[in-house]
Length: 212
Image 1 (cartoon, rainbow, N blue to C red):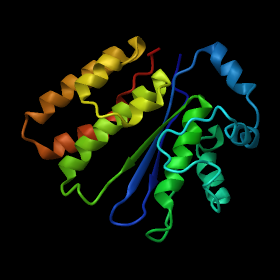
Image 2: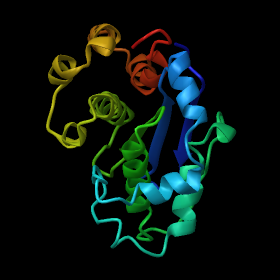
Image 3: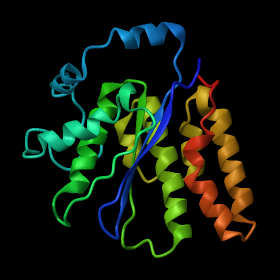
């Protein structure tokens, strides 16, 4: 298997910015052939509205989320191979519903079960330091990654520690996640805040090419 691409999409909204990271999952040759046979993006969007659609992070149902179809489609387009490596800057007024827009996009990508793994992270006003925000990002990244890999939405928002998440890691991911946790502990005890922030925010880059 090989990493097809890896991309990071940044959404700058206001002082409480949001970040959505889209990591590409490794695929075997057989899976690559299956991807090429997938329907067009519009058909995928429509099929995601089936009765089997699961709400993961969204706070309202798809039926109740109205008026943002074009914006949602534009965000979903970032999960297409044609946009690999490209970012999307989304600027909207406060209280314009952008947080829910990103959560709805997350849920659609999660339900696709394709080679894209969605990560949603919100920098809240309660995060007063770069260190606390970076640590929260690391936990969020690992938690949502494992939720997707296990195909268990409840894992994405359960109150879990890194040790809990390590125990839930799929066998194919256990080794690299264990190494990630061990490295985090070492960096955390180094009293080097800049290194800790860089380590936490760089966690998505530690996904190995040869896993699973």
